[in-house]
View (cartoon, one colour):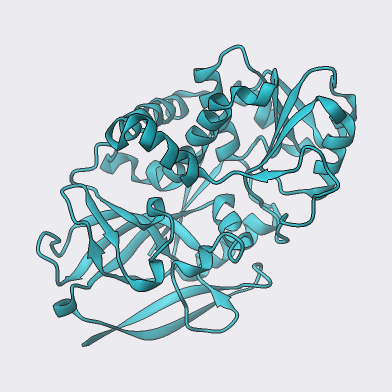
Amino acid sequence: MAQIKITRVLTQKTSIDKTTIDSVEAEYSCTNGDVVLAVKQFALTTNNITYAAFGDAMKYWRFFPTRRDGWGHMPVWGFGDVVQSGVDGIEIGERFYGFFPVASHIIMRPTRLSERGFFDALPHRDGLPAVYNQYSRCSTDPGYLQSREDLQSLLRPLFITSYVLADFLADNDLFGAKQILISSASSKTAYGTAYCLKQINPACELVALTSGKNRDFVKGLGCYDSVLTYDDVSKADRSTKTTYVDFSGSSELRNKVHAHYAENLTYDCVVGSAQVASPFRDHSDLSPKPIFFFAPAQIAKRNKDYGVAEQTRRMLEAQNGFFAHITSQTPTWMTVQQHQGFSAAQRVIEQLLSGDMGPEAGNIVQL
């Protein structure tokens, strides 16, 4: 057995606004088929806050055990380089894209190795969704461009949710609705969903809900048919059958939406939360009952419908179109901001939790 020192940022499970930096010695064995990757860069968005908020409910804390009671690893999407390998076909220096902890290194045990990449087979990841256990080899990834690493870290995981969510809504005929009401409309996953919905169903009416400070930004995106502030919910036309897609996690807002649209609310889709408190609570008093959207379930369905290769092709085609759209827009939809080191990661997490981060910011942490 060999050892490696791992520096990491941990999140307190019961108070995700509290983080700490520590270092631990971890054991690995190349003779047992382990590989060690150095985490090079990753994105931090409200999506990562959602992972922490649903850490227990959706098993996100299970991906990267900390072996420190009460503390979890907030998962992030990014790139890592192989620094030790006990696996034929995985070479030192190769770069992989995937799901990482906020840490200097990660130890994995590859299985299902192919030209495209591998899956991590360490026992604690058994039974977790395959989409999070898969690592893509950058040298063969058809969606990878070195010049777009920042965009891939920031937008690929968000866009997968956007694309699959739009596909889920379309697959269910918008649940009988003629318009979609989207909260936290300034978030990257929300406007990615709006973009995809317009590609799939141009006739669908998209109504944005956002804060007063983000209203001009959301209007400038041009992907919503109308924009309302949260204070304007009661002024919206409630005569149209409506599906609510909630990226805010606000119970207060949910109650207002239900009260306003009443029987014309056909479906309540909970996607994520930028709030510290998890929105998972008793909603038995509401109709329709809020249902949490789980992207891997729709991906699995489409893999059966189309086959994995065709489903992947469709998502990559949509992703490339979205990336090209974002980078060509004026005014700019997103400004990438570079941060260096673990303390900087802590500060970005604090800003995301406090709401001090502008919607145009795209945060990349380099280690």
